[in-house]
Image (tube, rainbow, N blue to C red):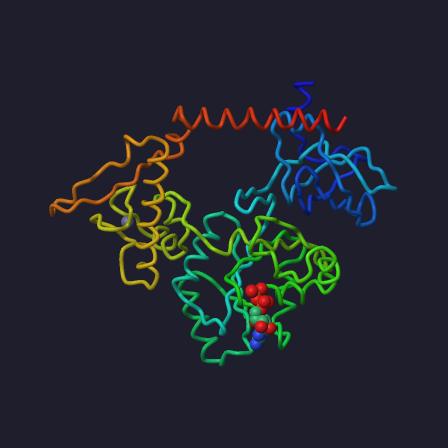
Length: 368
Ligand code: GDP
Ligand code: ZN
Protein backbone atom coordinates (compact mmCIF):
# COMPACT_ATOMS: atom_id res chain seq x y z
CA UNK A 1 0.00 0.00 0.00
CA UNK A 2 2.88 2.32 0.80
CA UNK A 3 4.36 2.63 -2.67
CA UNK A 4 0.98 3.05 -4.31
CA UNK A 5 0.00 5.91 -2.03
CA UNK A 6 3.14 7.88 -2.90
CA UNK A 7 2.54 7.68 -6.62
CA UNK A 8 2.21 11.15 -8.11
CA UNK A 9 -0.48 11.46 -10.72
CA UNK A 10 0.12 14.04 -13.44
CA UNK A 11 -3.36 13.59 -14.81
CA UNK A 12 -6.40 11.52 -14.12
CA UNK A 13 -6.50 7.92 -15.37
CA UNK A 14 -8.85 7.44 -18.32
CA UNK A 15 -12.46 6.92 -17.39
CA UNK A 16 -12.15 8.01 -13.79
CA UNK A 17 -14.26 10.76 -12.30
CA UNK A 18 -12.48 14.04 -11.73
CA UNK A 19 -13.68 17.25 -10.21
CA UNK A 20 -12.79 20.38 -8.29
CA UNK A 21 -13.31 20.81 -4.56
CA UNK A 22 -15.56 23.86 -4.22
CA UNK A 23 -16.16 23.77 -0.46
CA UNK A 24 -14.71 22.05 2.60
CA UNK A 25 -16.61 21.59 5.80
CA UNK A 26 -15.19 19.44 8.59
CA UNK A 27 -14.39 16.15 6.86
CA UNK A 28 -16.71 16.69 3.93
CA UNK A 29 -15.75 17.95 0.51
CA UNK A 30 -18.14 19.32 -2.10
CA UNK A 31 -16.70 18.25 -5.43
CA UNK A 32 -18.00 19.70 -8.66
CA UNK A 33 -17.46 17.04 -11.29
CA UNK A 34 -15.83 17.99 -14.58
CA UNK A 35 -18.28 18.25 -17.41
CA UNK A 36 -16.46 15.62 -19.51
CA UNK A 37 -17.57 12.97 -17.05
CA UNK A 38 -21.00 14.11 -16.11
CA UNK A 39 -23.32 17.07 -16.04
CA UNK A 40 -22.26 19.78 -13.60
CA UNK A 41 -22.92 17.58 -10.60
CA UNK A 42 -21.70 18.35 -7.13
CA UNK A 43 -21.04 15.30 -4.99
CA UNK A 44 -20.65 15.46 -1.24
CA UNK A 45 -17.54 13.41 -0.55
CA UNK A 46 -15.50 12.01 2.28
CA UNK A 47 -11.85 11.26 1.66
CA UNK A 48 -10.11 7.91 1.59
CA UNK A 49 -8.73 7.17 5.03
CA UNK A 50 -5.39 6.47 3.34
CA UNK A 51 -5.22 10.13 2.32
CA UNK A 52 -5.77 11.13 5.93
CA UNK A 53 -3.09 8.79 7.13
CA UNK A 54 -0.44 10.08 4.75
CA UNK A 55 -1.41 13.61 5.74
CA UNK A 56 -2.67 14.56 2.29
CA UNK A 57 -4.70 17.70 2.75
CA UNK A 58 -7.69 18.29 0.51
CA UNK A 59 -8.24 22.00 -0.10
CA UNK A 60 -10.78 24.15 -1.83
CA UNK A 61 -9.59 24.45 -5.44
CA UNK A 62 -8.00 20.99 -5.49
CA UNK A 63 -8.55 18.84 -8.55
CA UNK A 64 -9.38 15.38 -7.28
CA UNK A 65 -10.32 11.87 -8.35
CA UNK A 66 -13.65 10.66 -7.06
CA UNK A 67 -14.55 7.01 -6.56
CA UNK A 68 -17.64 5.11 -5.48
CA UNK A 69 -20.14 7.68 -6.78
CA UNK A 70 -23.59 7.19 -5.35
CA UNK A 71 -25.91 8.96 -7.77
CA UNK A 72 -29.02 8.60 -5.65
CA UNK A 73 -27.47 10.21 -2.57
CA UNK A 74 -25.02 12.37 -4.59
CA UNK A 75 -22.16 11.07 -2.48
CA UNK A 76 -18.63 9.96 -3.31
CA UNK A 77 -15.13 9.43 -1.99
CA UNK A 78 -12.06 11.52 -2.80
CA UNK A 79 -9.31 9.04 -3.63
CA UNK A 80 -6.50 11.21 -5.03
CA UNK A 81 -5.44 14.82 -5.12
CA UNK A 82 -3.88 15.89 -8.42
CA UNK A 83 -0.70 18.04 -8.35
CA UNK A 84 -1.31 21.69 -7.48
CA UNK A 85 -0.39 24.70 -9.60
CA UNK A 86 -0.40 26.94 -6.56
CA UNK A 87 -1.19 26.67 -2.88
CA UNK A 88 -2.19 29.31 -0.36
CA UNK A 89 -2.32 28.65 3.32
CA UNK A 90 -4.29 31.68 4.47
CA UNK A 91 -6.92 31.55 3.08
CA UNK A 92 -6.53 27.82 2.39
CA UNK A 93 -7.00 27.47 -1.36
CA UNK A 94 -5.27 25.45 -4.06
CA UNK A 95 -4.76 26.22 -7.76
CA UNK A 96 -5.78 29.88 -7.61
CA UNK A 97 -4.76 31.60 -10.86
CA UNK A 98 -5.16 35.22 -9.85
CA UNK A 99 -6.19 37.69 -7.19
CA UNK A 100 -8.76 40.27 -8.18
CA UNK A 101 -8.02 43.23 -5.93
CA UNK A 102 -10.93 45.65 -5.75
CA UNK A 103 -10.66 49.26 -4.58
CA UNK A 104 -13.27 51.97 -5.13
CA UNK A 105 -12.81 55.27 -6.95
CA UNK A 106 -14.99 56.82 -4.23
CA UNK A 107 -16.97 55.84 -1.13
CA UNK A 108 -14.49 54.94 0.26
CA UNK A 109 -11.82 57.02 -1.49
CA UNK A 110 -8.53 55.32 -2.27
CA UNK A 111 -6.01 55.39 0.55
CA UNK A 112 -2.66 54.97 -1.28
CA UNK A 113 -0.99 53.39 1.74
CA UNK A 114 -3.79 50.88 2.26
CA UNK A 115 -3.85 50.07 -1.45
CA UNK A 116 -0.11 49.52 -1.37
CA UNK A 117 -0.48 47.18 1.57
CA UNK A 118 -3.10 45.10 -0.22
CA UNK A 119 -0.99 45.00 -3.37
CA UNK A 120 2.11 43.86 -1.52
CA UNK A 121 0.13 41.21 0.32
CA UNK A 122 -1.31 39.97 -2.96
CA UNK A 123 2.13 39.96 -4.62
CA UNK A 124 3.54 37.99 -1.71
CA UNK A 125 1.41 35.01 -2.75
CA UNK A 126 3.19 34.99 -6.12
CA UNK A 127 -0.20 34.59 -7.75
CA UNK A 128 -1.07 37.05 -10.56
CA UNK A 129 -2.71 40.26 -9.42
CA UNK A 130 -5.47 42.04 -11.31
CA UNK A 131 -6.31 45.48 -9.93
CA UNK A 132 -9.84 46.71 -10.37
CA UNK A 133 -11.15 50.19 -9.50
CA UNK A 134 -14.86 50.03 -8.83
CA UNK A 135 -17.62 52.65 -8.64
CA UNK A 136 -16.10 54.44 -11.61
CA UNK A 137 -19.51 56.10 -12.03
CA UNK A 138 -18.62 58.23 -9.01
CA UNK A 139 -15.35 59.52 -10.52
CA UNK A 140 -14.61 62.24 -13.06
CA UNK A 141 -12.54 61.60 -16.18
CA UNK A 142 -9.68 63.59 -14.56
CA UNK A 143 -9.75 61.44 -11.45
CA UNK A 144 -9.64 58.26 -13.48
CA UNK A 145 -6.82 59.66 -15.55
CA UNK A 146 -4.92 60.59 -12.39
CA UNK A 147 -5.17 57.09 -10.95
CA UNK A 148 -4.41 55.45 -14.26
CA UNK A 149 -1.13 57.36 -14.53
CA UNK A 150 -0.27 57.02 -10.87
CA UNK A 151 -0.85 53.28 -10.82
CA UNK A 152 1.11 52.72 -14.01
CA UNK A 153 4.04 54.25 -12.14
CA UNK A 154 3.43 51.61 -9.48
CA UNK A 155 3.49 48.94 -12.18
CA UNK A 156 -0.25 48.27 -12.50
CA UNK A 157 -2.93 48.79 -15.13
CA UNK A 158 -6.20 49.18 -13.29
CA UNK A 159 -9.49 48.00 -14.74
CA UNK A 160 -12.23 50.60 -14.18
CA UNK A 161 -15.64 49.16 -13.49
CA UNK A 162 -19.06 50.20 -12.30
CA UNK A 163 -21.66 47.67 -11.30
CA UNK A 164 -24.22 50.44 -11.13
CA UNK A 165 -23.70 51.60 -14.71
CA UNK A 166 -22.53 48.25 -16.08
CA UNK A 167 -19.12 49.60 -17.12
CA UNK A 168 -16.17 47.29 -17.65
CA UNK A 169 -18.08 44.14 -16.73
CA UNK A 170 -17.42 42.36 -20.02
CA UNK A 171 -13.71 43.01 -19.61
CA UNK A 172 -13.79 41.58 -16.10
CA UNK A 173 -15.73 38.54 -17.27
CA UNK A 174 -13.06 38.00 -19.86
CA UNK A 175 -10.31 38.21 -17.23
CA UNK A 176 -12.08 35.71 -14.98
CA UNK A 177 -12.97 33.22 -17.69
CA UNK A 178 -11.88 29.61 -16.96
CA UNK A 179 -9.73 30.73 -14.02
CA UNK A 180 -9.82 30.39 -10.25
CA UNK A 181 -9.86 33.94 -8.92
CA UNK A 182 -9.66 35.15 -5.34
CA UNK A 183 -11.61 38.36 -4.76
CA UNK A 184 -9.95 40.69 -2.28
CA UNK A 185 -10.24 44.26 -1.06
CA UNK A 186 -11.42 46.37 1.86
CA UNK A 187 -15.08 46.36 2.83
CA UNK A 188 -17.50 48.70 1.15
CA UNK A 189 -15.74 48.81 -2.23
CA UNK A 190 -18.47 46.75 -3.92
CA UNK A 191 -17.10 43.20 -3.92
CA UNK A 192 -20.44 41.59 -3.09
CA UNK A 193 -22.23 43.75 -5.64
CA UNK A 194 -19.73 42.67 -8.28
CA UNK A 195 -19.95 38.99 -7.39
CA UNK A 196 -23.74 39.08 -7.43
CA UNK A 197 -23.64 40.84 -10.77
CA UNK A 198 -21.29 38.24 -12.24
CA UNK A 199 -23.21 35.30 -10.79
CA UNK A 200 -26.89 36.23 -10.74
CA UNK A 201 -27.82 32.76 -9.48
CA UNK A 202 -25.68 33.16 -6.41
CA UNK A 203 -28.21 34.93 -4.26
CA UNK A 204 -30.52 31.98 -4.74
CA UNK A 205 -27.86 29.33 -4.18
CA UNK A 206 -26.33 31.04 -1.17
CA UNK A 207 -29.63 32.33 0.15
CA UNK A 208 -30.72 28.95 1.41
CA UNK A 209 -27.60 28.53 3.51
CA UNK A 210 -26.57 31.88 4.87
CA UNK A 211 -28.97 34.57 3.76
CA UNK A 212 -27.13 37.59 2.42
CA UNK A 213 -23.71 36.78 1.11
CA UNK A 214 -22.08 39.64 2.99
CA UNK A 215 -23.11 38.29 6.36
CA UNK A 216 -20.79 35.87 8.11
CA UNK A 217 -18.24 36.47 5.43
CA UNK A 218 -16.08 38.57 7.66
CA UNK A 219 -16.46 36.31 10.66
CA UNK A 220 -15.13 33.04 9.31
CA UNK A 221 -12.16 31.49 7.61
CA UNK A 222 -14.60 29.60 5.44
CA UNK A 223 -13.66 29.54 1.76
CA UNK A 224 -16.08 28.64 -0.96
CA UNK A 225 -15.73 28.72 -4.71
CA UNK A 226 -18.58 30.11 -6.75
CA UNK A 227 -19.07 29.07 -10.33
CA UNK A 228 -19.10 31.75 -13.01
CA UNK A 229 -21.77 31.27 -15.69
CA UNK A 230 -19.17 31.33 -18.49
CA UNK A 231 -16.75 29.00 -16.69
CA UNK A 232 -14.26 29.69 -13.96
CA UNK A 233 -14.50 29.95 -10.20
CA UNK A 234 -14.56 32.88 -7.78
CA UNK A 235 -13.33 32.61 -4.21
CA UNK A 236 -14.83 35.05 -1.81
CA UNK A 237 -12.82 35.00 1.37
CA UNK A 238 -12.27 37.17 4.39
CA UNK A 239 -8.74 35.81 4.71
CA UNK A 240 -7.32 38.57 2.55
CA UNK A 241 -9.28 41.54 3.62
CA UNK A 242 -7.02 42.59 6.47
CA UNK A 243 -3.58 42.21 5.00
CA UNK A 244 -0.90 41.51 7.56
CA UNK A 245 2.83 41.43 7.02
CA UNK A 246 3.91 37.80 7.15
CA UNK A 247 6.84 37.67 4.77
CA UNK A 248 10.59 37.81 5.26
CA UNK A 249 12.25 41.25 4.91
CA UNK A 250 14.54 40.09 2.13
CA UNK A 251 11.53 39.03 0.05
CA UNK A 252 9.76 42.38 0.19
CA UNK A 253 11.58 43.91 -2.79
CA UNK A 254 10.09 41.18 -5.00
CA UNK A 255 6.62 42.52 -4.26
CA UNK A 256 7.23 46.01 -5.68
CA UNK A 257 7.18 46.12 -9.51
CA UNK A 258 9.03 49.46 -9.33
CA UNK A 259 11.94 47.82 -7.52
CA UNK A 260 12.03 44.92 -9.95
CA UNK A 261 12.12 47.38 -12.81
CA UNK A 262 15.10 49.21 -11.27
CA UNK A 263 16.95 45.99 -10.54
CA UNK A 264 16.44 44.79 -14.10
CA UNK A 265 18.59 47.64 -15.44
CA UNK A 266 21.15 48.10 -12.67
CA UNK A 267 22.50 46.29 -9.63
CA UNK A 268 23.02 47.43 -6.07
CA UNK A 269 26.59 47.33 -4.81
CA UNK A 270 25.72 44.62 -2.28
CA UNK A 271 23.91 41.45 -3.26
CA UNK A 272 21.94 41.42 -0.03
CA UNK A 273 21.14 45.15 -0.15
CA UNK A 274 18.05 45.98 1.91
CA UNK A 275 17.69 49.20 -0.13
CA UNK A 276 17.69 51.28 3.00
CA UNK A 277 20.94 53.03 3.67
CA UNK A 278 23.58 50.90 1.97
CA UNK A 279 26.02 52.67 -0.36
CA UNK A 280 25.62 52.03 -4.08
CA UNK A 281 21.90 51.22 -3.85
CA UNK A 282 20.00 51.64 -7.12
CA UNK A 283 16.57 51.24 -5.52
CA UNK A 284 16.65 54.04 -2.96
CA UNK A 285 15.33 57.21 -4.52
CA UNK A 286 12.58 59.53 -5.41
CA UNK A 287 9.68 57.30 -6.33
CA UNK A 288 6.25 57.40 -4.72
CA UNK A 289 6.11 54.09 -2.91
CA UNK A 290 9.67 54.06 -1.61
CA UNK A 291 8.33 55.30 1.75
CA UNK A 292 5.86 52.40 1.79
CA UNK A 293 8.70 50.01 1.10
CA UNK A 294 10.63 51.32 4.11
CA UNK A 295 7.56 51.05 6.34
CA UNK A 296 6.71 47.51 5.30
CA UNK A 297 10.36 46.55 5.63
CA UNK A 298 10.28 47.71 9.26
CA UNK A 299 7.17 45.62 9.86
CA UNK A 300 8.65 42.58 8.15
CA UNK A 301 11.71 42.86 10.38
CA UNK A 302 9.52 43.07 13.48
CA UNK A 303 7.57 40.07 12.26
CA UNK A 304 10.73 38.07 11.79
CA UNK A 305 12.06 39.09 15.18
CA UNK A 306 8.83 37.80 16.68
CA UNK A 307 9.19 34.48 14.87
CA UNK A 308 12.75 34.12 16.09
CA UNK A 309 11.67 34.89 19.62
CA UNK A 310 9.05 32.16 19.45
CA UNK A 311 11.59 29.72 18.10
CA UNK A 312 14.29 30.54 20.65
CA UNK A 313 13.89 33.23 23.32
CA UNK A 314 17.66 33.46 23.81
CA UNK A 315 18.49 34.35 20.24
CA UNK A 316 16.14 37.21 19.74
CA UNK A 317 17.99 39.18 17.10
CA UNK A 318 21.33 40.35 16.06
CA UNK A 319 21.99 43.97 16.82
CA UNK A 320 23.98 45.73 14.21
CA UNK A 321 25.77 48.91 15.07
CA UNK A 322 25.13 51.68 12.60
CA UNK A 323 28.27 53.70 13.29
CA UNK A 324 26.53 56.82 14.59
CA UNK A 325 26.01 55.09 17.91
CA UNK A 326 22.53 54.24 16.79
CA UNK A 327 21.47 50.60 16.72
CA UNK A 328 19.23 48.92 14.25
CA UNK A 329 17.79 45.49 13.85
CA UNK A 330 19.25 43.23 11.30
CA UNK A 331 16.96 40.57 10.01
CA UNK A 332 17.97 36.98 10.42
CA UNK A 333 18.17 35.55 6.96
CA UNK A 334 17.49 31.96 7.88
CA UNK A 335 14.18 32.15 9.69
CA UNK A 336 12.60 29.20 7.95
CA UNK A 337 15.51 26.91 8.51
CA UNK A 338 15.83 28.16 12.03
CA UNK A 339 12.23 27.39 12.76
CA UNK A 340 12.59 23.88 11.42
CA UNK A 341 15.54 23.24 13.64
CA UNK A 342 14.00 24.39 16.86
CA UNK A 343 13.48 21.30 18.94
CA UNK A 344 10.59 22.81 20.84
CA UNK A 345 8.71 23.66 17.68
CA UNK A 346 9.43 20.23 16.29
CA UNK A 347 8.08 18.55 19.40
CA UNK A 348 5.00 20.69 19.30
CA UNK A 349 4.29 19.82 15.71
CA UNK A 350 4.96 16.13 16.39
CA UNK A 351 2.49 16.25 19.23
CA UNK A 352 -0.13 17.94 17.10
CA UNK A 353 0.52 15.43 14.31
CA UNK A 354 0.01 12.64 16.80
CA UNK A 355 -3.21 14.23 18.00
CA UNK A 356 -4.37 14.55 14.40
CA UNK A 357 -3.62 10.91 13.69
CA UNK A 358 -5.41 9.81 16.88
CA UNK A 359 -8.38 11.87 15.89
CA UNK A 360 -8.38 10.54 12.33
CA UNK A 361 -8.09 6.92 13.45
CA UNK A 362 -11.03 7.52 15.73
CA UNK A 363 -13.05 9.11 12.91
CA UNK A 364 -12.19 6.17 10.68
CA UNK A 365 -13.49 3.75 13.27
CA UNK A 366 -16.60 5.83 13.71
CA UNK A 367 -17.16 5.77 9.98
CA UNK A 368 -16.94 2.01 9.76
P1 GDP B 1 -18.27 45.01 -0.22
O1 GDP B 1 -18.25 45.31 1.25
O2 GDP B 1 -16.94 45.21 -0.84
O3 GDP B 1 -18.82 43.64 -0.51
O4 GDP B 1 -19.24 46.09 -0.90
P2 GDP B 1 -20.80 46.00 -1.27
O5 GDP B 1 -20.99 45.20 -2.51
O6 GDP B 1 -21.57 45.56 -0.06
O7 GDP B 1 -21.11 47.53 -1.66
C1 GDP B 1 -20.96 48.60 -0.75
C2 GDP B 1 -21.81 49.77 -1.24
O8 GDP B 1 -21.33 50.26 -2.49
C3 GDP B 1 -23.27 49.40 -1.47
O9 GDP B 1 -24.07 50.45 -0.95
C4 GDP B 1 -23.40 49.30 -2.97
O10 GDP B 1 -24.68 49.64 -3.42
C5 GDP B 1 -22.39 50.35 -3.43
N1 GDP B 1 -21.89 50.05 -4.76
C6 GDP B 1 -21.42 48.85 -5.24
N2 GDP B 1 -21.04 48.95 -6.53
C7 GDP B 1 -21.26 50.23 -6.89
C8 GDP B 1 -21.05 50.96 -8.11
O11 GDP B 1 -20.58 50.46 -9.15
N3 GDP B 1 -21.35 52.28 -8.09
C9 GDP B 1 -21.87 52.90 -6.99
N4 GDP B 1 -22.15 54.21 -7.07
N5 GDP B 1 -22.08 52.25 -5.84
C10 GDP B 1 -21.79 50.93 -5.78
ZN1 ZN C 1 19.72 48.48 -2.86
